[in-house]
Length: 128
Length: 362
Image 1 (cartoon, chains in turn purple, orange):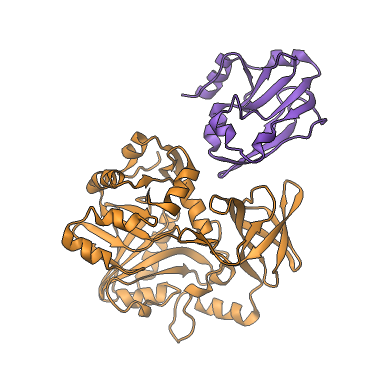
Image 2 (cartoon, chains in turn red, green):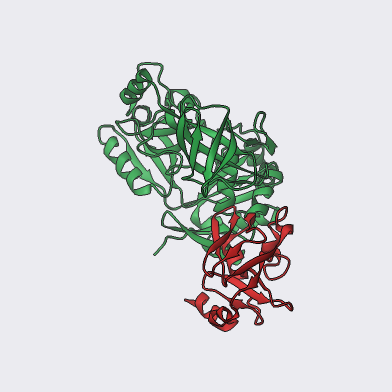
């Protein structure tokens, strides 16, 4: 069974969003997504300073099996990317909600968060 | 309803992630494709390949029939137990399928064709066989396990009765024999040493479990694909199909054109050879970061081509691919990955053999 922490919010396209203490949104892919993709071997992240709109494809994660676009769950400016993934994309497999985070956005419109799914609603999408 | 092999329950018990492959529910991995890949390169891994189609060609004209059906020449198979890799072609020289052919007796050859092409292969073989005194007997009751890796042979030998173990240990590459209920061939699809072993379906689970106890790791189709890609081995439907001749698929070495033997597709191949072959299959090694994938556009000095198979190579820790490109292409090229042109070296596969990166690859 997939691990779905209750303190995060989710999209149907299997991204998670966690709001940091400073109000920024940290984004990654879910445990379900990393498992479905298999061993990750390459990550293409946005550049710090990029302005990203909600729903934009803004990163790519590639496993041995396939490439998968990452869509921004919310709009914002990129304030940090996880540079550790550069040499070690397998961090996403090992710890998708922790060391395997992808990037952080400074939110433009915090109301966008309300449109995301909570853990329970995300879990339901996996059952279909 | 997808078909299941006799090892289906064993895969589930081992934690396999199952996918549909040519109408069969098969394991893609048992957790980590990369670990399984490394297991085969460094020790021993095994694959359930029971979905593949085993066909026995029986009858007094078995050799005569295969001499006509196959692009490689069965006259090369002089002693019982010898095997080769070959294509069967259509009249236009396109590849109907690729297969291994075993010579067992003058009235008994065995071929193993792909699972995904089962129906068209059987229809093709049966239609061509009508003119000969042969029968093509499918053997769906056989399961098949490929045990591959530097420790694969010794792991299998420990499971055999002593008299068989001696004979099986003496099998040279591309040789096979029947040992009790096991048909054991020293062949594979990984670039490592090992055996492909056929057995009655009811014996498969026990044999699989014995292999696990002997330290052989179950491996899925995911690792099988990266292993065969590194080993420079084509995948039917991806690297060649009915619209591509062996000359355009890096398989000229499997075609025996020299003597006056007639075989299906020969005229077309001779024509193509006389006119000149426009394209060739080459290996690519991506020079930067990223992953090569089938369908990506290849830009060379001699014109454009396309990647047919591509992935991340766990052994090289770099992306590698096969690409069909214009005949004159060489040196370096660029591949279009999501709109960016990235540099690749053009190389001659295989990339990896027996656990080692081949010369000239990096």
